[in-house]
Image (cartoon, rainbow, N blue to C red; front, side, top):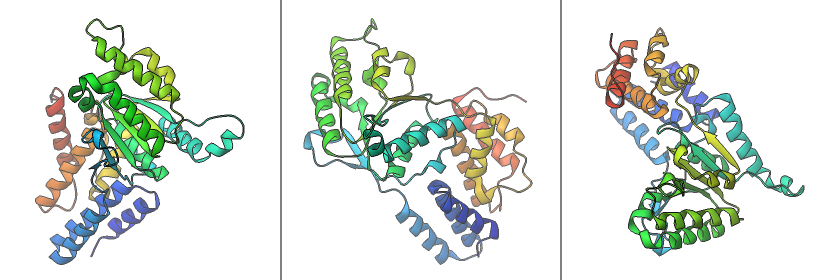
Length: 322
């Protein structure tokens, strides 16, 4: 049967609304049962986990012209899924609190935060934050694929944006404009084209006049190239950074779960993970867990974890010597 530590970890993740951690521990339990020869039970656990995970994204069907441009999903992520600084967590909690108590603010002539810009390097949690906002508010997440809007409908992009904002008005949800810099670049850039300036002007007008009950989230990896007029149109701007030592340690602990060797010292691994993104560190932990399972190890050792972190560094960064 599952170990006591796995059971405790499963309960903790459930009551702290850490869905990803819950799924990870459940799969670890399945692997444990498989090693014990309980293949049927292990398979049943995996099937239950697969059914419980987020439903796959699908193309919105209520606007035929937006086919392949907008995807909708129903996230179950909760705030506990994010490993961020206390300040960032507090700011996200404030967005959620204002949205939930918007009627209270409206009585005093105030509006809640509902137009949010997320800026920072890839893999630092911007897309996950949008999923968390949707999951916490029990709203669908609509992801607008900006690159497809621009490349496929260069002459009709403004018209497509208008349709999208019509949908935002009609259908309540969290709308994520991913890779927003595809249209949000500075209007005075010498390499810009007239069409893109018109698109950006259209977006500025649409978002300024939007009065829907939806939450609009724009995400960019390159905030420096965004037009400065954009920042004034958003109620809040959250800047994401690569994780610091404390966040890295919490991320590794959460991700390894019961596969973490009790005697493992994380100092060396944390130092090796510096300059890696949240997503890269999480992937390294997952790789270490898979390697432990496939080699019939009960835990992830410090050596194995450092090996996987080194592979991530080698893939995206200059390797560490020594």
